Structures are given as structure tokens and as C-alpha cells.
Length: 407
Ligand code: LLP
Image (cartoon, rainbow, N blue to C red; front, side, top):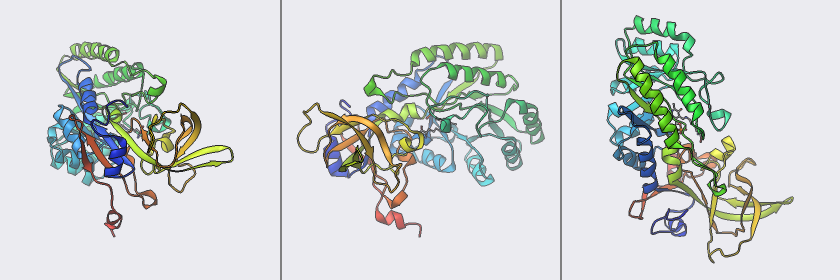
């Protein structure tokens, strides 16, 4: 990817920080934050970056510096957001099936919490009677790139169904709770805006049942083109923004009270600023298929194995610059002891040799944060290519001692 590595190269980065390695580009991260901030012209609008997509402390500081707020899914995410300098009022805790202690963690820090079932609303009321709360509704509409990431609609664990509004009101009354916010998230990675708008409209009709709302959170899910090498188009943000702006502005007039709207993009902010670098260790042919054996197991990047997700791949030659146009269809695999450990199936790539390096593109979201120590492998380091084009270590690689730390 042009200019991604600034004044350094993938080869130098791997020589300095080891392989595999997550590399992020600050300029791209900032640009994505700004695009989201400009999505609509309605004045009371905040972007809550969805921390789960990438919770590296240094990236969070940049996102905060760009003026975004954040959503958190756990006390751990709240902890890192506070460490990055976010104020409690800039954090929205979207809880799902949590313990009383986890709820209390947010309440103690004055962080607004959303609950997503009647039973959790009741728990909230018991531990914080008279408090302010938000509720995640399921508007009955879903979208997403894989069934595992569709979070709205009739087949998911998320949200309160609108039929339960009378029961919600009863619990609110019983514990004297003030419902100040309503949120939803219908799923992850949409490339067409219309399902999102449909979800927003159904959410707004749910909101009409409540008179004291201060904010409505429309969720994330904004997609990025993972098939850039095949010229996949970007999500048309200006068009989506315009439609959204009209729907929201009209609705507020009708509701008769100023409301803050929030959205929660994770992937859109973080995916494209990240490239996962790895090294080719072995090449072989097994029963007619060619395998490129790398150090990029699914402990490092889970998305291809978990969702059959596609990531474009770039190659960087170890010795001679790549000049031949010759390409071949290969399986790019990792070093984990499972046959499903495949990064790219039947992918047409320039011919590779041992010690060549590869870059898995658009790996900044749901990459490192889903990495594990499976097979007792060490999670990689993360570096940032700053606006000045310099590399900076922003998380060190695990060590063998890290693997022993909890014994
Ligand atoms: N808000 C809520 C309540 C969510 O559950 C999520 C994602 C988001 C916002 C952010 O969604 P985004 O804008 O990033 O699509 N690991 C999967 C994606 C799982 C998304 C889970 N929830 C993947 O790698 O594709």
C-alpha cells in the first residue's frame, strides 16, 4: 500500500520488531475519524468509537485527540479508555449479560450504562435505584457480513424486543429509574446504507414510547472494502449521511425535544490503518495444492478462520525486488496445529519464496484484539507509523515470561 510505511519498509520493521507484527498508520486512522465526524450536519451528534475493534492505548489516545467519544463492552475496556484520557461522560458502557459487580464498576465511575434484557434492567434497578439508564432494543432488523456478526433481528441474543415496552416501563417505575438513552446495533459490516436507515427508522419508532430521552445511539457496522485489489467500492458515506440527516432532523422536530444522536463505528475507524506483517517460513505442495507456510496463524488474525473473512494480501520480497509477473494460486496458511489454520484459500499471488514477507491488509480492526496465545504462541508487537513517517513501538511482543505470569 503506497506510503503506508512512511520512511521505513516492511523488511526493516520486521528486522527491528520481529515477525509477525501489527503496523498502524496514524494518518489513515485520523482521516477515518474525521470522515465519521463529518457524517451528518445535525448539530448534536457524537461518534462513539467502538473500543472492541482495537483497544491499543496509543490508538485510543489518537482517537480521543480527534474528538471522538467511545463505547465499551466491559470493565476492561472502560479501564483502558480511562487510562487513555477519556472522561467518564465520554464513555458509554453497552453491557450484555453482566454481573452486578460489572454494572457497579460503571456506576461507581458515573459511566452511563445500557442494559439489554428485562432481567438486567431489574438488576440495575436493584443496585442503583433512582439512577439513569439506557436500554438496548432489538428493532427486529439485522445486517452483517456473516451470521455470527448479525446482532439485530429475530435470531440474536441482543436487545430487548419492542413487545416488552410495557414491562420495561413497569420496571423503570418500580425502581424509579430514568431512561435517558436508547441504543441498538443491528450488525457489523454493511456496504449499502439502506438496511442501516431501516434499522434507524424502526428504532426511532420505539423511542416514541419514551418522553425523557437525552440520546439515541444508532449503532455501528459501517463497512470497509476488504476487496480493494478487485476495485471494490467504498461505502457511500456522503449519500448515507444525507439520508440519515434528513431522517433524524425530521424526527427531532416531531419528537419536540433536542436529542443527541450517537453512532458506534469500530471497524470503519480502525480497519484500514492496520497491516499485519508476517514471514514465509516454508513452501510445499500437498496433493496438487501449493501451501505457503507463514507465521500468521489464527492466533494472530482470527477473522479468516472465524468468519471466512477475506483480507487482501501484499508481498514484500526478502532479497531481489519482485520483478517477475508470474503468479500462482496458493493456500496461505499459518503455524497453528489445526488444518483450519488458513489465512487465504486458493489465492492468486505473485510467486513467493522462503523468507519473503507478506502483508495482510485492513487488519487494524478485530485483529490484535482477537489474538490469543493458542499453542502458547506469543502475541505480536504493534507499531505505529506516525504522521512524520517514523515507526514507534506501541505494544511490545509477548515474552515467554508473559506465558508464565499467572501461575
Ligand atoms: N456497537 C455494538 C453494540 C457492537 O456490538 C459492535 C460490534 C459495534 C458497535 C461496532 O461494530 P463495527 O462498526 O465495528 O462493525 N469480530 C467481527 C466483528 C464483530 C462486531 C461485534 N460488535 C469481525 O471481525 O468482523
